[in-house]
Amino acid sequence: MIVRNKANNFTLLFAWQGTILPKVLPALIFVILISAIIGYLSSTHFLNIPEVPAIGFTIFGVILSIFLSFRNNACYERWWEGRKLWGALIATSRHISRDSHVLNEVHREKMIYGTMLFSNLLRDRLRTQNNNIEIYKDKVGIDPIRFGELTQNINAAQFILEDIQKDLVVALKQGQISDIIYSTLSQHIIGLGNIQAGCDRILSTPLPFSYSVLLHRTVYCFCFILPFSLEASLGIWTPVLVGLIAYLFLGLDALSTQLEEPFGIQENDLPLDSIVRLIEREMLSSLGIKELPPAITIVKGNLS
Image (cartoon, rainbow, N blue to C red):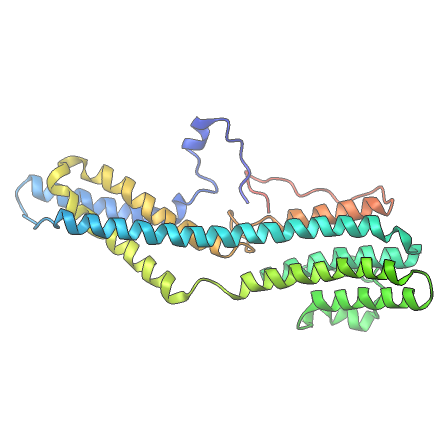
């Protein structure tokens, strides 16, 4: 996720890293070149190209703007929902840190390390990756053979939640906690499960493919028609105005594509690594550990 100081408007105006411009630049240059060529041929009277009727082009642009706005709102809603779910994960991990003090040291450490491992596995599940989790091997009380197979599990994050729940049941049966305390801690585990279910819903249910393809094709058709519609009235200014309009439409189309998948590793996606590291640092600090892993730093304005 891009993190920048927006106080400097001049820097913001000419920002490159993290913007959508690099993604749409090839198509944008192509449209501007078409505009320049058409403008030159028309000004030299070498070629007379029939002008696209203004009324039809205007209606086309208005309708496209409405549907692009709808798609961008839908994609941003997915991005924002993903951020709220991971914010809820931070809050739930803090609740676990506080409420788990009723457990003995062994059970509390296992629950806290299990929560940290869950956040790592959930991130890896959403990003389809496998990061090193060996540091948790001796912390969560799972058989080494089963732990080695954890990354191959159909739902490793859910497996960890089940293991945490089983440990709470053991503490309840041994009389270490009451049924009221068990119910309270179980609600946190349920909350983690609901967070995963919400993330899975976003991941497995993108916007309808045919709808996205339709808008994508329409945007490019609109931008390629632009020079033929505006050249007669703008003359040599055609490439400039066409470039600005094309940048707006192509940029919105490309930006919505990025926001549609909020859990990826593109520059405008959610900083899951940073959130996971925050959870680890806070929960380790709750255990009284002094040497904490370093916080994820911003690299070239990007927080991963």
